[in-house]
Length: 91
Image (cartoon, rainbow, N blue to C red; front, side, top):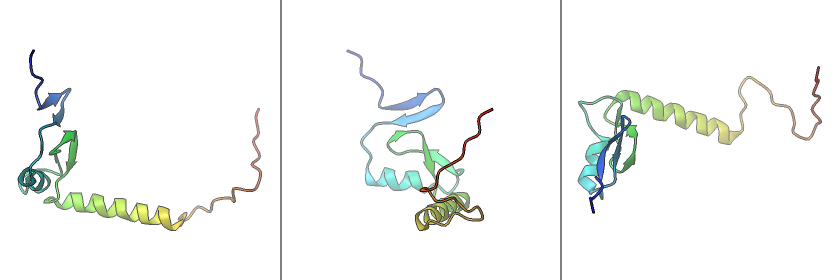
């Protein structure tokens, strides 16, 4: 029986199901010469390159959005209370 490849590319998306070592994990998340996205050390797709300054901006924005969502701050738009009925007009 033919063995399936453990890593490669399918429709332009990389995959890697080889058992990751600690060195490979660290080196995949920290690649100073590469762009913002790099191949995942295990799994399918891409992940952030923490050696790129744009990745830190993405993480900061995502963290701020998560903080705002958990705090319950709706921003400039006030949300209506959920216990009041909603009027729906159908033409």
